[in-house]
Length: 259
Image 1 (cartoon, rainbow, N blue to C red):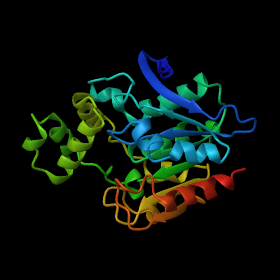
Image 2 (cartoon, rainbow, N blue to C red):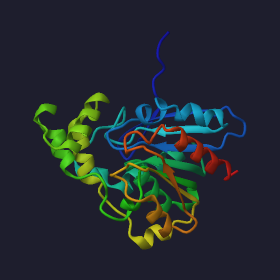
Image 3 (cartoon, one colour):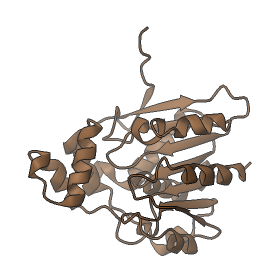
């Protein structure tokens, strides 16, 4: 049996690959998933059973490969990876799928993109789940730019920086384009001002592992955004919080309240 090609569309000359499942549910409210840096829709959302979990909850699930990642176009100019540009890719995905409004969940870099989307296009965002990103949405970004140097090193063995080694190994595991990822991490380092964060009006859940040293405090960010709630994911670091049961339970409860 032939494997069906992944759907994709063009946005400003960039091809964006995505998946769209659960659309046969007659009342399936759409949820859009935005993966983190060096990941893909499959690694971030399919493998940890997020897509299956959300479909079981009766949701229509849409997930994209961010530009420079997975099956989407690879770009090598850091300017092509501004967080606002990647947020427009998500807005274009909503347009392409004829979705007026959706719940949006991002992880790490994907959460940053989701925040930029909620700020620029509030009418399109029903609620926002910021996974793996706390106060570093407004302070200090999170991942250091030195990761780009690790990605550009001749081999993993040449990388001495501990965090750089983790991301280089992860990027190799996901069979990523290392040069495109180096451009991405250099180009996507935008923060929101505290005033911008405070102006987000969609319901917000901030889900961060208690051992996450990358995201910054969920509670500090929640204090900035009116009505936002923090969800602690016990004993999980930045890499392991994604598929955690406590994360899924908290997100499902949050989404259930949006109905």
